[in-house]
Length: 439
Image (cartoon, rainbow, N blue to C red; front, side, top):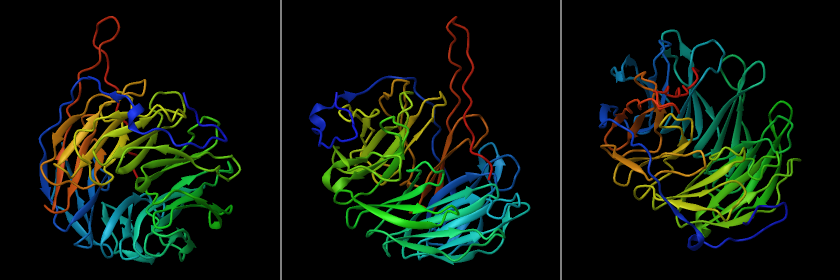
């Protein structure tokens, strides 16, 4: 068994040594897809209780219409006609968040032209006109957090066109201070927040696809970015995750480098610095990297989503244990997630793929293994910005999937599973599905 250690650096053999894993579990019942109109190039769907009626409305970012659409929930998984709000130029993402702490949800929109738009909420689930705050060129990813007792909102964008990330801090009145720009490597696709020094103020860790670097940005006590440190990170690093991979209590970093068919694991020293990368061979065409405790040992496990649609799973710090799970068909984009879709308290692998218009579920077990895939049609070419939420109030997770070309949102509902039997043979109770917090 090969373990990550504080000094190891190696390249493991590729798939020849990996077991092909399948398994059988109870099949889920998922409804046929139902499409609702949403013209304007929908790219992202968020389910949130905008109207404060206790049911999730749908919030949709429309890239070609330059707007946000609100589909009001009517109950039982049905929705009314959308209400549109102008929101910058080519929106690529949207977050529901209470920026001004007035109890009404606000909308924060990532504008592909180089800005963040904020629409503050009003009573009844309507919104004020968007205010725009410039950031770097061609932002493709952002993160929104609230920090401290005053819930100060911080927005950070990864700007692929200007070799930078931009930091925005709320002014306490629903607006934001001018952005602070920090230079990183070329073409940063995204970033993670990781508390590498244990001071309670997470650092920003940014891979750069254009020059194969990893930039760690420290912050002062107010949260504003300070110094940077750069690490070599393969040829073209793309996706990134953070967690305690080797179980020493310190945050670690992992990135995938599809150009070299490798994953790089950077162990944290606990003082804000990272060790040199451990190189791990992975399958061809890596598209996404996921992290979570799959087997209950309190160590972070890693999952690589491949272009083939298959998954390569590494449990804990044993990087020789990667197992391949068939994913149900070719994949496109980063539409894979770890989520307890079947409601049994264990993480499952779920994905939407535009190739073949499919949604797939691999149910997880407590030992970190997964079932054979259950694959269902989504009805139209789906996008990656889909939502998992209990849309009809039956206690199970459902799907809302944007279809850019068709100008629709596909809704798919999972039926509740029968209660699990108790050891004495009597009917048990179904685990509760965690609900998304109200903004």
